[in-house]
Length: 229
Image (cartoon, rainbow, N blue to C red; front, side):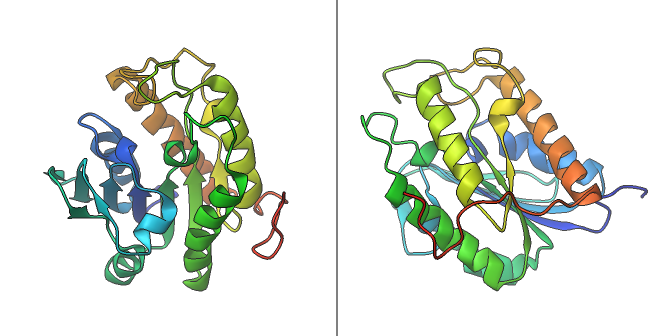
């Protein structure tokens, strides 16, 4: 297969965007596999980066998918969040895609928890760096105002800008650049409708392909030892 992703093993770690029916776990592995990648995808509803490193449970479901096979969806109370170290050891990826942003937005809090987000992100990027793996970190898309999650365009922009500064050595994929606010419709203010997820998956795939074809140094920003606040 003549593709930049031919032979690349991709491990995807995500939050509820990788859990919802019709969400990224149903679409993104297919798109990457169509370009030659071998994909292992995992999602845990409500998960933050450190939840993938320390014992944690989710009460709103988790998913797993190998390649383009069927999605294994589990619902119920007390389901453990996947362990990133175990997944890396098992799948032996060349590239890790992290789909986590909204769970760190603290959308209902007046103040953005910058120090907490730093701790969350650098814990996972530290593991990825220690394993000498290439990484793309996918930031949150725009949503729509809804009291259920409290997500606002202003907080999304603040979160996305900050993630772009601290996810090194991962390459940051800024989802806010893919479409203007309100273009991708949401079912609840945070999660997208079917058309939105389809467009997001296609945009992520194109960005991953571009990064693989023309690797760029991670954006200049804070290092693990330099807290930018």
